[in-house]
Structure formats: C-alpha cells, structure tokens
Length: 283
Image: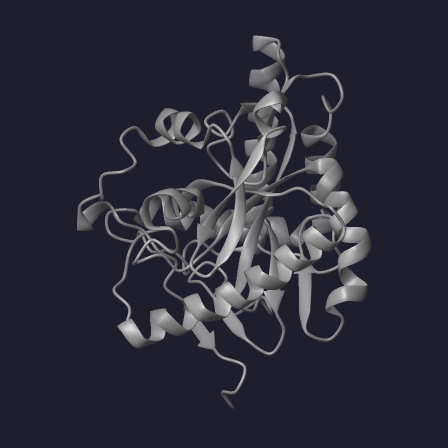
C-alpha cells in the first residue's frame, strides 16, 4: 500500500474503533463456536506487541470457508443496525475480494477506493479455501485467481487517478485507466466476476490438505496445512484474547523471516485514508 504518517491522536482513534469492531467479531465467534485466527500483520502484532503494531491501521483475520459460512448465517441478526459485512459473496461488495466487517456510521476510504464505496472503519476477513496439491493445477488455480482479481480491481478502481505509486508509472497508469473504462462498458458484472472467483477458490475444498486465502496477493505464501489450523491458542491483543495458530512462530518465520525485528521506517506500510469519518463526526 505505501506509508503516510498519521497524527498520533487520529491513529489512536482508528485503532480504538477497530478494537471495538474486533471485540464484536470475537463475541459472535465465541457465542457460536466459530473458529478464526489472526493473520499477516495482526498475527505479528499479537506475538510481538501483544496488540497493534504501533503504526498499523488495519486488522487481518482468517477463517476456513465453512467457518466463514457459519459466521455469515448468524452474524446479521447479531449486528443489525450497528455493523455490516461486505465481500465478494455479500450483496455489498468492495473494490477487491477481501471481506470486510465494518462499523456503520463511519467511513474509511483508501486512495484506491477514492470514496466510491461506502466502507466504514473495519477489520479484514480472509477466507481460506483448498489449494490444489498438484503443482500444475496449483499454478492454474493461482493464476486464474490473480487474473480475476486484476480484472475486478481494474473495473472498480481507476488506477490512473487512484494510486499511491504515480512516480515513473505514467504508461502503466494510462493503460490501467483505459482498461477501467473499457471494463465499465463491457457487459461483465461484479456479481459475475465474484462468482467466478469463488468457483475457482473453492474448487479444491474437501480435496486438498492445504488451504490458503485467494482474496488478495501472497496466495502461495499464505498456504498452511489444515492440520496447522486445527490447534488454535489464545493470546492477548490489547485488552482481549484472540486466537492464533499454535505454530504461529513457524508460520510467521516462513512468511516474514525474523518478524520479531522492527522493519526500518522506509519498509513500513499502512492504509492512510482518502476519507476518514468517525461515528460522531458530522462530515
């Protein structure tokens, strides 16, 4: 994404809002015995900081497909009027395939969103599906997922305007901008692209002992065995307990190397918003 320095008070408010959203998410999961686990930067935050990475402004959690489907069945009646769920298999969608559990009455629009989606302050939910075990089939599955993601994002984001990486990227931005308008003209709906993405993501469910998230990039890097997700443990995150895979150290080292070392400032990332609105704000 890139990195832009927050006013410390603003970042603290974002993190406080996200923590409140997380508490509601965890409450629902615990009530209905739904399994989830911290992933990516949030997993590092749990282990290294026992809370937020100091400069981080988002939260990432994973769920196996069957657990996510259970969550979608029970959550709406629990959150009515206060929170919402957006994602590729929800009526409300986003500009990418990552599911969002967000607080209504707030806004958090990134530069890619550019204010075109009514997204609030949120936590990300990455759904883990079966990854083909055969090397050839695995490459095909990953390649198709990335292709569908690229088409979907170019359709929903004008990368000529909405990008944090403009310097030296004029030709690429012009190409993406042209493709954005072309895809808008073609009779390809978001619903169709989401359906094809899900068909590809779930193709090997029940047929593979390896799972991963197809919502974003780092598909192969996110892969874990189903057995690794059978044993979850609770660790402190700020003032609550959240679940992580018991072998979190092995998973994090495979993905990030020495994750206990703080990255230098130039390698830090966040999602500094294009539009930010807290619930009590009037505009």
